Image (cartoon, rainbow, N blue to C red; front, side, top):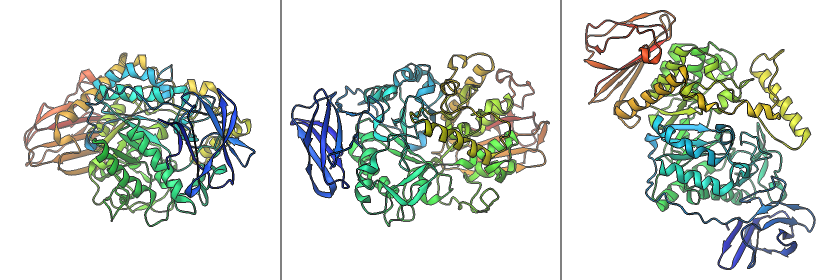
Length: 606
C-alpha cells in the first residue's frame, strides 16, 4: 500500500494507514464539503477513490466519526501543520535526462538553509546562485530538512509531515525546479531527512497508529517505532518516503539525521534495510544514490559491508571538527575537553576518528572503535556546519572566533584532507552573521518550553551566567542569520573566497589529494612546536602538507629521501594577504623550510 493521495486514471486515490480507529472517513474541505466512508484493507490501511477529485482539493481524515486530522502522508499543507492536506499533481517537466549522478568520492558538499541562504528564503532564490557555487568547486548542495514544519521559521528538524515540502519555501514544484536547475548546473542534491523523531507541534501520527514507541526516548521526544508491534508498516512508511525523494524528486543523496537516535534492536535493522533498498532503487533509476549517516558514535559498523556492518555508504566524522576547532580556538569545554592539541588533529587527518576506543573525559567512558576497513571517501568532514555553529549560545561562526590566518589553515585542513569535505553556507567567504537556533511555533507554551530548554542546554555546555541567549521564537533571531552574500567578494571576504576556490581546484587537479586515490597516509605532529606534517603517497605521486599552528615561525627538517616537489599552495603569499615570507618554490633533500606563524604550505608532484 502506498500512503497518500494520488491522481490515477480513475480519479484520486486516497490511502491511509490507521490501524488504531475502527472507523475512518475522508472529509473533503474544498472545493466541496462532504464525508466519504473508506474501505478497510489488510494491515490496517483504509482506501477510497473519488473520480471527481483533483489537484488543489483539500481534505482531512475523520477518525471514529469525531476528530479530523491531516493526512500523515500529506504532500502539501498550504494552511500550515494544523490545516487540511492538499491533493497535488506529481507531473513536472523534467529536463535533466543527461544528468548521470555523482559518484561518492566526487562529493564536495555545501550545506545550506533555504530560509536564510537568501533574503527571499525560497527555492527559486537559490537558482541564480548555483553557477557561482559550481565555479567555487562545489559538487553538491545539501538542503537542511524541508518536511513541513510549524510556521515559516525553523531549522527544519521540527518537521511533522515527512512527505510534504515546506510550503513557504515553494512547495513541491519549487523543490523540483531547484533540483532540475542543480542538475543542469552539474550539481548533485543532498536532502537532510529526519527519521529519528517528529516535531512536537502538528504531530498527529499517533492518532492513526503505533508510529511511536515508549521503549526508547530521543532527546527531542518520542522515538519512532522501528522494532515493536506494528513496526512493519511504520518502516514501510519511511522507506516509501526515501524512495519518493529519489524517484519523484530526483534527489541524489539523503543525509540521515542523528542515526544514533534511531532505536532498533531487530535482527534486520531499519538502516540496513534502507541501505539495501537504496541499492535496488539505484539499479532501477540508473544513477548513483547515496546515504550519508550523521552520527556521533564513531561506529565503523555503519559503513562496513554486510554482514559485518549495515552497509551504509558514508558517515559524518565529528572528531575532525572537534580537533580542528579546539586547536584553533583553544576551547576546552564540553566535548572539546577530549581534544588536546596538534596530535589529535594529526590522528583525525590520518584516520578520521580521534576517539577510537580511547577514554572520553566528556562521556566518562571509552568511546568509539578503530575505523578499520573505512575508506576515506566514506567519511564527511567539516570545519563548520549548522550544528556546530547553531548550537553555540549565540550561533557564532568560526570567522568570529579566530583570526584570518587561522581561517586559511581551517580551509586547507578541510579541503586537502582527502576525506569528503562539507562547507557550511557562507564559510567560503568568512560570513560574520550568526546562525542561531530559531522556531516559529504557534503554541505559546511550546515557545516558552523551547526558550527554557535552550538555556538549560547551553548551561550544561558552558557557563552562560549573565549571557543573553537570542530568543529562538523572535523573528529578529531568524533575520540575523540571513547571509550577507553580497559581501563575498569584498576585501578579505573575497580573498577567502578565492582561496577556497584555489584549494578546491588543487583537489580536483591532483588525484593524490582526492579520496579516490589508493594512497598511504601518515600524519606527524609536534606539540612543542605546533607543527603538523600530513603526507600522502601513491605509486605515482606524493603530497606533503605542512602546518604551523604556532604564533612563531618554525623550521622544518627535510629528510634525505624527500623527492623533489613543487609548491602548489602557500597561505603566506601576498594574494592570500600573507606576510610574503614565502616558502621555497621547490623542496628537495637539503632544502631549508621555515614556516611562518599560523601558516600552511602544500608541496605535491604531478
